[in-house]
Amino acid sequence: MLLTLDYAFFAARLHGFFAVGGHEGVTLTLTAVDRLPPQAPGHAGFSLMFRGPLQPQLEQMTYLLDTPDAGTFPLFIVPVGRDQAGMQYQAIFN
Image 1: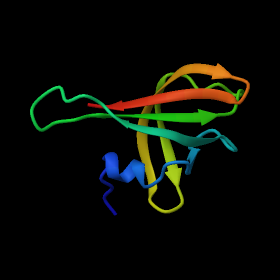
Image 2: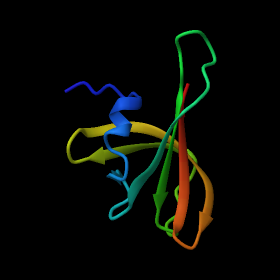
Image 3: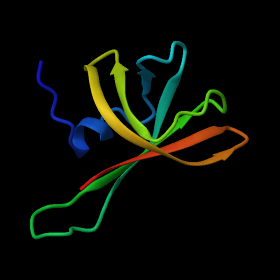
Image 4: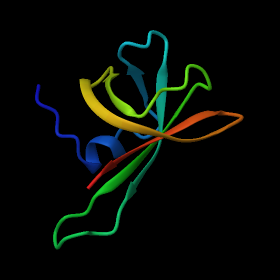
């Protein structure tokens, strides 16, 4: 199945879980899906925020994420912060 990784795909999975390939037991929770201001007419990007465990901290790079209802896909994520609840990661589509 060919996935369309668009705003609707992620909005439907808000608060869902994504297993991180190559990191057994590491799961990210999608905590926010936000539209970005259009950079060109008819083209609006969006931002994703994920929360993961404090350890291990994932580096900025592309990971294979797996979600039970849609399968596996690559996604470039960047660590953007940490708090008592865990690490925060962001992905931007523009």
